[in-house]
Amino acid sequence: MGLKATSPLISLSGFSLQIGGRRILDRISLTVEAGEFVSVIGPNGAGKTTLLKCLDGILRGGEGRIEVKGRPLSAYSSRELARLISYVPPGDGTPIPFTVREFVLLARYPHLSPFSSGGKEDREAVWAALEATGTGSLADRYLDTLSGGERQKVLIAAALAQGGEILLLDEPTAFLDPKHEEEVYRILVQINREGGRTVISVTHDLNHALLVSKRILALKGGSVLFFGPPQIMVEQGILELAFEKSFRYLSHPDSGKVLVFPEWDL
Amino acid sequence: MREERGRPRRVVMIWMALLALAVALLVPFLGMRTIGLESVLRGERGDPDSFIFWNLRVPRLLASLLAGSALALSGMTFQAMFRNSLATPFTLGVASGASLGAAIYVRLGLSFSLLGLSGLSLFAFLGALLSIGLVYGLTRVKKGFSTATMLLAGVAVNFLFSSSILFIQYLSGVIHSFRIVRWLMGSLENTGYRSVWEMLPLVAGGVALVLCFTRELNLFLTGEELAQSRGMDVPRTKRTLFLATSLMVGGVVAVCGPIGFVGMMVPHICRLLIGADHNWLAPATLLFGGAFLALCDILSRTLIAPAEIPVGVITALLGAPFFLWLLLRGESEKGLL
Image (cartoon, rainbow over all chains, first blue to last red; front, top):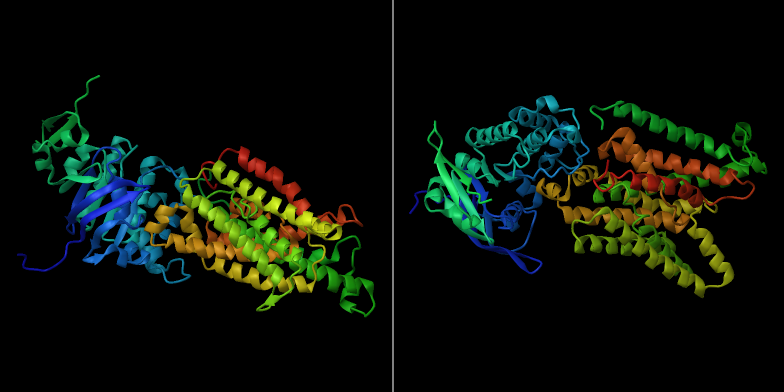
C-alpha cells in the first residue's frame, strides 16, 4: 500500500487498437512514472510508433483505457493534451517552409489566446528552447536548409517550447551521424534529468536504449514483451525473443557498461 | 533555397497594397473608351462617360476585386491544407460542383431568396460544399495521398460535374444553353451593383473565417500529425475551412462562373514574394488576388474590343502554362515550396 494516493503519470490498461481490421496494439497494460526515461524497442511493425501516436492523441479510439495524470485521455481537449505532451516526429524530411524561429513559435499554439500569434512569454519560451538545444544560431535559417542533425535538434526545441512535461520521440537519431547522435542524446538526458521531464523514445539503436533508459519497453506483435530495467532485459534474453535472432554482449572496456551487438551470419 | 529572408515582408506588403490601390483607382478609367477624370467628377446627368464609369465600370471593378480576392484566398486555403500548390478549389472540382449547383437552379427555373441571399448563390454554395465533401471523403479513404492521385481524383470529380452540367444543357433550350455556356467560361461581363451585393455576404463570411485561421493554416504546413500534436483539432479545423472555401467559391461562381487558376497562381506568387507565414500571406493574397483579376478583366475588355473575351478564358490562358510549370518543376511531389 502506497502512502500517497497519487496516480501514475501515464497508465494504460488493456489498451488495444485496430486499424483496417488489423490489430496493431494488443491489450497493452503499463504505467510510466513522472521523470522516467523510457525507450521503446521492438521489431518493425511491433506497434511502437502507433503506441506513441495513441499516447499523443494523434490516433484516437481503441479499446481499453489510457489515462494521463489519472484522467482518461479522451477527456482531454487537443489543446489541453498539447500543453502536457509534446511529440517529435521521425525525421522524414517533410518540407517545412518556415524559419527555425517561426517553426518553434508555432509550437506555442496550445498556449496562445485566440488570434494572437505569440507574445513576450512565448518568444521567451522559444528562445529558452533554442538555447537548451544549442540551436540559437540557426534561428533565422529556413528549416529546409538545415542538415539532418540540426533539423532534429530544432524539432526537439519546438517540442520543448510547447512546454509539456512529457516528451514523446519517434526514432530521434535515425539517419544521424555519431556526433549528432551524441548531441541529441545529451539534450534528451539533460531534459530528463535537469528539466525533470518524462521522456518516451522509440528507437532501433539498442545501445542507446541500454545506455540512457531507466526502463525499456519491448513490444512484439502489438503486445508488451517486457517492461523493466535494461540490465534485467539483457539477463532475461528479451532481445533474442523480440527480434528472433542472436545477440552478443560485451562490457565497455572502461565503464564496464553492457553493450550489445547483433550477431550476423552472412 | 533561400538561406535568409530577402526583402522585409513589410516592404512587400506595402507594394502589394500600392498595386491594389493603383489598380482600383485606374481600372475604371480604362477600356475601349478611356474616360477622363473631369467628366467623372462633374458627373453630369446624361453624360455617357459618367454613366459608363459609375454604373458599369465601378461595379464591375468591385465585382472583380471581390471575386479575385475570394478565389485567391480559397486557393491559398486549399494549398495549405493539402500542402500542395496544385491543390485548389478549381483543380479539385469544387468550382465545377458550384457550377452544377447554379446550373440546376437555372434549369429548374427557381427563383427564391433566403436571408437576403439569392437562390442561385445558395445552390452554388451547396454544390461547392457537396464536391468538397467528395474531395474530403477521398482524402480520408486514401491516406497518404500522392499529388498524382489527388489531381486524378480532381479530374474525376470535374468530369462528373461537367457531364452533369452538359446533361442539364442538353435538356435546356438553345438560348438558355448558350447562356449557360457563356457563364461557364467565367465572366465579369454582366456584373452590376446587384452582383456585388449578391457576392458580398458569402465572400465576406468566407474571408473572415479564413483570416481567423491563419495560425492553423501555418500548422497545416508542418503536417497534420504535428498540427494535431500541437493542440490543433485537425478534423474540426478542416471542416471549418472547407465551409469557408465553399462560401467563397459558391458566392463567386454563382455570379461570375468558374474563373479558373486565379486561386493557384496568385497565392503561389505571393508565397514566393512574402513567404509561407499565413499571417502575411493571407492579406497579401487578398490584395494581389483582387488586383490580378481586375487587370485580367482589363485585358478581357480591350484585347478584341468592341467584343469581349470572357475573363475566365484569359485566366486559363495564363494559368494553364503556370500549372504545367508547377507540375513539371518536379517539386510538387515533395510539397509546397
